[in-house]
Image 1 (cartoon, rainbow, N blue to C red):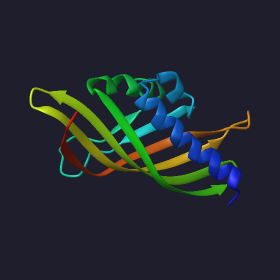
Image 2: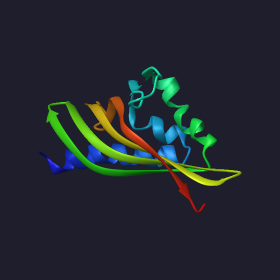
Image 3: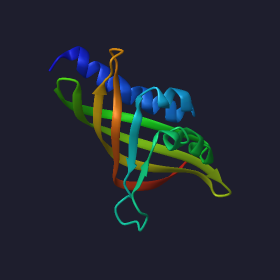
Image 4: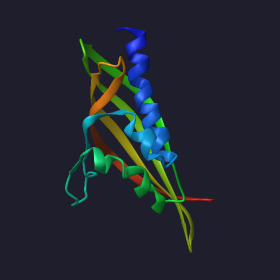
Length: 145
């Protein structure tokens, strides 16, 4: 695989995580194509339905993080398959969601695999066309704050 393409695809996930943690909707939209979708799968063991978000709803994701004191998305490995102007990839992530209440600090951790479809645009950039967010498991931790 071409290292420049792999780097460009990896950069999309870095920018995604940075935008969510930074509560920056414009930066988040810059990693997606105009017709993108974000599929959010329910965590195992929950009764919540899966949701598919269009581009306008994707813009709201960073704002929804305001319910937490702060978040911290730590990316792991990524693997990609490229074919012409399209690519697929899987990126691993630990997403920490820190909050404080009367009993102290709490960290809700999500162990995620992003299953992505990418498209190469006429302007010479790669974008996420579809991101399927699959939460493999979660845990809650008490923290020092």
